[in-house]
Image (cartoon, rainbow, N blue to C red; front, side, top):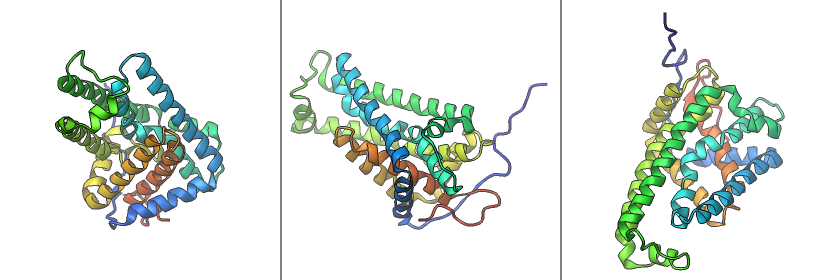
Length: 270
């Protein structure tokens, strides 16, 4: 007989309704975690700043430098899986335990197959976005008419003729980002927190959390975009602080939004 796997871990989690200003409390709690484990958090953040430089160098070496902006924007897509280590720092701190950098990098081992599946899903979205961005760019400029490196920013952002290109590209990116946010807002913290949970349950819980708290989660999504954009605008250096802050705050958003069986009170408040 074939082995069966339950679609949901038992018993199922419930979603709490939160106030519109709740994301600010998540950020405050995230900042406390960052200050409590600065060396571990910032060291992990350095890894992603270095990754940004390597990705940018690779795009230039491959002569597709015009994809630097959309690909770096992909941090917003893969951010939820990249922040797994920060979730573990916050989880361990809540338990009153010290955490090492080795534990941070190995956090995925708490639920390896399901966290890996979630990572693959986000990677596929990133690849899709990269392909769409390249297609939009080529449709607008035409093959062989790619602006030079010196004129790329001017011709992309400062020319009146580029407005339709920017509007269309931004709209497509926003749709993908919104969908990604819906399925990943709390899914990976849930998979980390509950080793018996699976990716279907986690994504469904995340979508429900976003739907039930649409206004608060819209604000939270906007804050994530602003902090990440600021990190990217500082040539990745800001990511060293921005990603830890967002990661820790995301853990608290999960604990605030998702009520696990046997837990009647929110645990993600600052």
